[in-house]
Image (cartoon, rainbow, N blue to C red; front, side, top):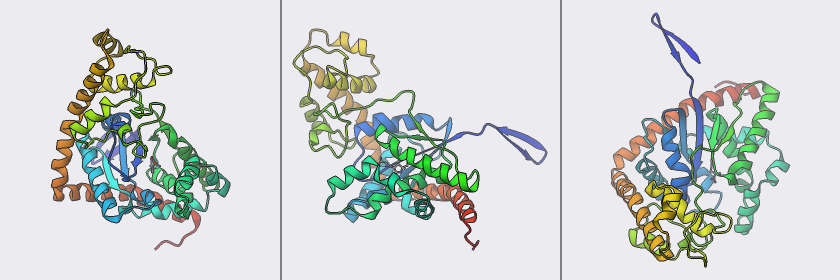
Amino acid sequence: MVVLCLEGMVIIMDEKKTIFSGIQPSGDLTLGSYLGAIKNWVELADEYECFYCIVDMHAITVRQEPQLLRKRTLAQLAQYIACGLDPEKNTIFIQSHVPAHAELAWVLSCYTVFGGLSRMSQVKDESAKNADNINAGLFTYPSLMAADILLYQADLVPVGSDQKQHVELARDVAGRFNGVYGDVFTMPEVFIPKVGARIMSLTSPENKMSKSDKDPGGCIYIMQKPEEIMRSFKRAVTDSETCVRYAPDTKPGVSNLMSIYSVASGKSFSEIEAEFEGRGYGDFKLAVGESVVELLRPIREEAERILADKAYIESVYKTGAQRASYVAEKTLRKVYKKVGFVQK
Ligand code: TRP
């Protein structure tokens, strides 16, 4: 709680916890990132102080086509807003617009041990996928991510399970730094929202829906055309049982389609089971596809409208960068002072 005294008035504010998360602009947002992440972010705005970053600096750890990276960064911003993230209530910004990220990352890299970075599975996976370009940025990627989180003194970091290890590393670095210099950084924690859907690939339902899925039919993008969405749902993997029943371990394909249908239509699993009692998978897949088309239609149309409004987009990312810089600079100044840099 913070007590402020302003011209004789006493204002008591409940200090909100801070949330930080980021998504790389390395492709269009997927139905999985919408239902599993962004849809939840929308609900958090009143209760928390939220920072959402488009992490373009992380994206260049693998080769990007410059024009495409620029286009995707702006498209991602438009898509965030179209998904319901209100830029007035949330700080939405582009990582490279706030130089403090690169500056703190350097300092933190001097407090990150080599062995810790070598153990990161994403470093190993990405190195295996990009054998011709295993660059130093790929290796120190987690230091930059730690800087992202620690600059804003984030309490909570909503991420998927694949990112837990990186948040752990950020905690290690924060702990090491605080151990030497006193309480500089807030200790961040992984945040698993109360409601959240883990959406799996439509063609290999044991894996998370991901834009890096080798089979393009496995992933639905929020900007995709209705015909393409329907085509992917018609081809979705099910099982040989012909029975719509929720059993993630034995019926991963059908259960995944049920999760998607449930979030898109608001129906419970038992309502869905009753609706498709005695009907084939063909009908079921059509219904799921149609519900997703209707769910995404207004988002796609709104994103297209926002993207066409260049002045608005620019005002959002400029305001976002200003607000983010204000907080980030404060932390960076403190860190520079602690490590012994001369004040400029
Ligand atoms: N590494 C994350 C991913 O690939 C993206 C990311 C970068 C991030 N910085 C972050 C996520 C800070 C949460 C907090 O998905």
